Image 1: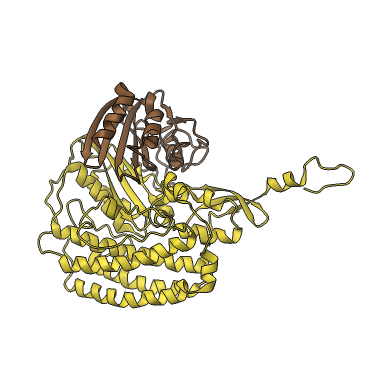
Image 2 (image 1 turned 120 degrees about the vertical axis):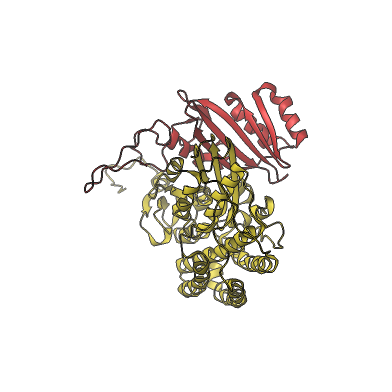
Length: 379
Length: 159
């Protein structure tokens, strides 16, 4: 606001500054990883206020699911978190299984866990690649996507698809693993252990990367709990909340692994949690392949599946956090209500608090460290 | 968890109309909508419950009423509680929990957006996923979804 000497402004300097400048980031912006719009109020380099605007990808999936029989809804879930489609498939199948009291064969449980952990590696590799690119470490993108390609090849061999798998079924999985799949996975595990060391050299021991992430976007433990954030974001703030340990599903209570927890709560800690989860996923994969029994992989279900009336929910630890499906049944072939508790939706709601007082240059690092997928936010 | 449930029943009596122990560390409660906020406050503060993590909140339409579903987790005791209530369709109002659990802020906005449920005391109750000028509440069972009308092939069947 120009101040003329004839007519002095009634506003003090502090008031002029406090109005701030409003800028829009997105909806089309490379660092928002999708169509997310942030309305920022700036005071110079500092962010005073941030308002996320979402809904650009809203397709009304929950309503569409009410109009279809239970098992027809599995392909929709591929389009929620499209970087971890198998986790979503498992979430909805578990919910239907609980509603209908369906038992899953032992071998199918092991196959599911094997695929979940491969999916987690693929998803975290996308995080590493894009996060590195966001911060200017472009090399990381090439390294991460090279290894992700190997995981996708494995998943393609098993499921026939590379992104939207649609491969978990109510009561098991549609087919057994292909011939020689275990050996291929073990070869990948061996190779990937060495490759994680390369990532450490590129990023973890990189001074520039450290100074851009350490002490940035700190989320205190109490705030993280009150906002209900989950996944690596919550565990980086010092809460050991991992559904695989807190409420074990499938065979997670029979495998040994650790849940990485850090107290710092900053961008750096969220990065470290994901790096450690990659190593733990490899441990789980080895144990699952070792212990996997033989047997059927699918429970026989009636053609028209009608679960009894009631309410059920399931929760799985997707790469982004607690993914929960809640279903209401009235005994008819279609659900009355399907609700999807998407981890990114809740994790994004804490972003305005993280950005208060942060520098504009750190916006990309903070948003990248939450690792949101807009497909499941907008549903 | 029996001790904790008894403590709750002592405090609220008739307002808790039903409760079941679903699993060893999970209880499902049905409460009167008038006591929604008080029960949540009690679950949050009471040392036997300490439900400090808002996991989920949603609404569904039974055709005759709106059901409200709240799921909480305690980081201290590793226990879960599901709180259910029912509010009339023609007067869909319930107390907001956003000041108690900031994490339900967006869930409540979404349920206002989709069902038109008014969360009383919410700091910023406006549409979140749909455009601001959208008319009606599409997740209600009586909402008529108009076919969008494909200019090449005429109106498409609704599904």
